[in-house]
Length: 220
Image 1 (spheres, helix red, strand yellow):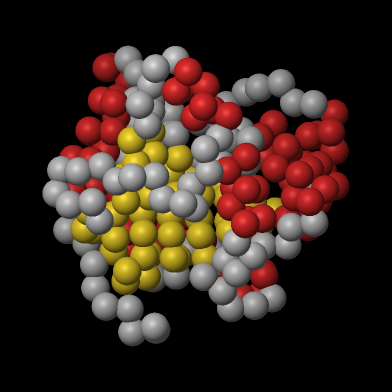
Image 2 (cartoon, rainbow, N blue to C red; image 1 turned 120 degrees about the horizontal axis):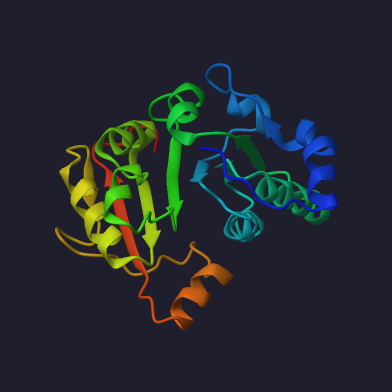
């Protein structure tokens, strides 16, 4: 579902003026070498919000190319505006539902990392079925990773963290880097965002789950 929200004039302009530069329309598998003009490891972030973490990661790691997917238009507009202001060339944006678009846009084995940071926890029990990290989606995301590639999830909802841990450990192509039943330390590449710091001020612990695609990476 596309979430409604207040959009600023700058975000509206960015959605019109900057989409041709940074936006990707998915109507089949993406040729990322052509999109970015180079061969590089690819990182996909699902549900980037305002793009705060994505911007910080892209600025810190020019050797990787990043693709973000989001449904929230104010967040997309904010990211587009910041990409232009910061002169970043290693980020592209997809607008829409990741569950529908990822299997079309990305061929199996094409991604270095898939990031799912602070997905909507749908806290009411009757809404848990709406949570993003369901078995079918996890299997599809795992298939898009190269062997040795990483699926990285972070949440500040403890019950969702344990539910996600169960779902991820049930996927036979993934291995928990922290060990069975364990959460991982925050890896250096994941920025601490304002959203995360706000949760910590409210007393929320943050849980990182880091799972590796099993198999041998023959590409080196």
